[in-house]
Image (tube, rainbow, N blue to C red; front, side, top):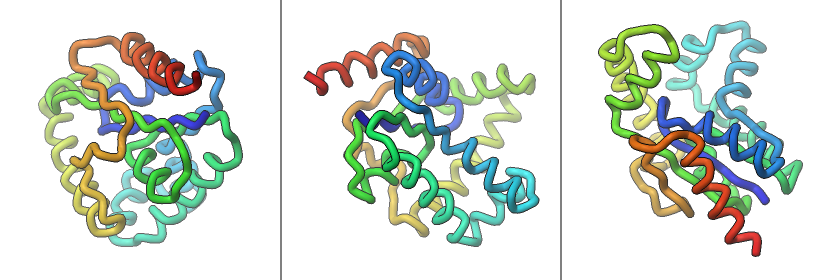
Length: 178
C-alpha cells in the first residue's frame, strides 16, 4: 500500500511518517531529503535553492518528477512532504493520504525546541515561509493548501504524541487493507 503524509513544518509529519513506515514496513521517501540532495547537486544551500524555487518552476517540477518516480517504483512506500498527497493525487497515483496539522504557535515551539532557537523567531520564519509557499503552490500547482478534500485522514497533532498519531494512521491503513 502507498501512504502519503503531508502537513506544514513542525506538524510532526516526519516523525509520524518514520513510525508508520517502520511499523508497516514501507520504504520511506522524505521529500525534504530529496530537495536537499537536489540543492546540493545544484551547488546551493537549501535556503538559496528554496528562494530560487519561488521564481523557477522547474525546481518543483524536478522534485515532483523524482518523488513520483520513487513512489511509482514500489507498492509499499510512504511519501512524506508538504505536498506529497497533492502530488500523488494530481498524478492519479493511488495512496492513502494523510494530513497532519497543529496550530502555528505549537509548530513554532516544536521547531524552536528542535533547532535550539526561540519560538518567537521560528514563528516569524514560519509565517514568511508559509506565505511564500502558499503563493508558490497556488501559482505553480493551482493548489489551495487549505483544501483538505483530497485527504483520507486529517489529524490535529496539537494534543497527541507522534506515537498516538502514528497509531491512528496505522489503524486506518489496516481498515483499508481488509
